[in-house]
Image (cartoon, rainbow, N blue to C red):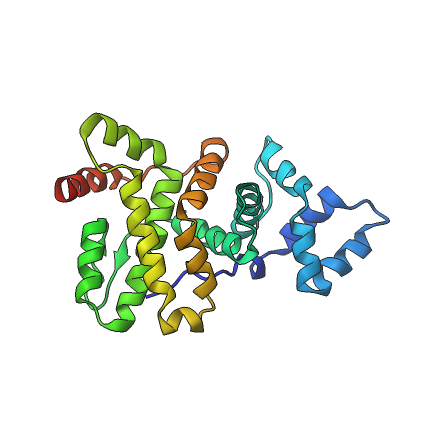
Amino acid sequence: MNVVRANSRIRFTAEDVAFVLSVLAGEREEKALLELFFGDESSRDLILDDPALYEALTNANHCLPVSMPFYFYVLVRQVFLRAGIDDRSVADYVASLLVEFSRSENIPLRVPPDQSPIEYVFEMLAASARADERTRYFIQAHIGNHTLFLTGVFNDRIEHRARTRGFPGVGYYEGVGAGNFLAARDHRLARRHELVEVYDRLAGEFVTARRALNDLSDRLLHFGEPAWLSGFLGESSRLFN
């Protein structure tokens, strides 16, 4: 089982750097900016925080030659800053989460040994309860990721079904997600993966992070709705209401 890592910033491509230069540097400034970008981590992070990059990405009327880690990191970093989440590692982590979950095959949970896809939160919770200590960590982290993605990107869909069909609202998934990030935080593997502070921040500010993603999703993110989403919402309502 894989764990999402806060590693978007180490997956940038030559095209990403070229985009940064095209937005921020004139000919005379290009060499100096390159030296700063590759010189040290703090300089690179300050460059990536420049609002001009966010504006260039959001105002483009054509497909940009940038990587998904770069695209998601710049966008998430800016909306999180505006929401008061200033930890770069958290933005980095959530950007990696969006990269992973943009591939629909990564959304279901797969638990050894049978690896059958688990799509419903109640099944994930049941799998966590009967799992060994190591596997439980991966499941808890996945539940946190899954619910943050779901409520961050498909918030309107969840709330509509809650209003019209009596299904669980966003608050239910917020509670489950925050609780599982908190549980994953205390595991030794969270320390090994350097995710203790990330999980702690997401547990404490799950609602803030979710709302920031809602704003981003409403304006810029266009994930296709997974085919299982209707069943997921309907099944969870039957079991938890």
